[in-house]
Image 1 (cartoon, rainbow, N blue to C red):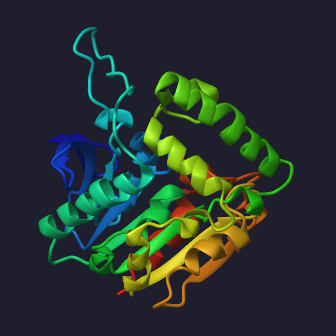
Image 2 (image 1 turned 120 degrees about the vertical axis):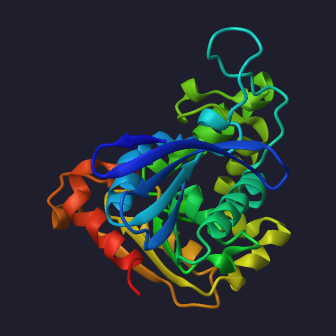
Length: 298
């Protein structure tokens, strides 16, 4: 285990998904007493490294924090048999967004619960990471969940003209590319490469009026099982996770009354936040502190 700055230990780990697939993660630990456990769940096509600063901040405040990559993403993508440090092609790689939830996110929750069984477990979900919370059979293990720019991402609830760009890209560029290449390439503008099944399910949900709620997934019944504290933050300049889209997602948690807060960049001294800006270190003493204090409430 390597010592890092800011009084935090950082350890690169591997743990098994529900089906045994090896997932790669990073564990952030305080030097002092661990008072809370926190699991950070990534957005679609986003590697865990963008959450490193926020995870270190939480660990500095006494939290044991895990970030990790879903299968096919970042360091949870299998290496190529030839070539130095090259990822294996995603052609033929079987995965979907619902697999990410049922096999990967659920396993990360279980790993944290088993390792830190005396600590309350908080869940941070960024975009898809927040959507996955409702699909987890073991979401009852989570005491508090904070959703950051996490929404029912139907194109209809995005702002104009972004909504039309997203619809056109997903259906007229992304889907044909995924079928032609056998995966969705990151160079098309989506971030990381995505497994074909992940992208096609994502495109189907985006095109549906109620996003994943229009699917036939049996796991949708798990939304009603979550009974922890839930707060969702949406940012006024985020064209994707608009307030109506965030409320559509949180409305699926029928056993509780989620709290939805809209934050304007000017309220925290920022020019812009958008869909990814929360995780910039400039928000350490504003957004980060507010979220951390909420998660660490007793």
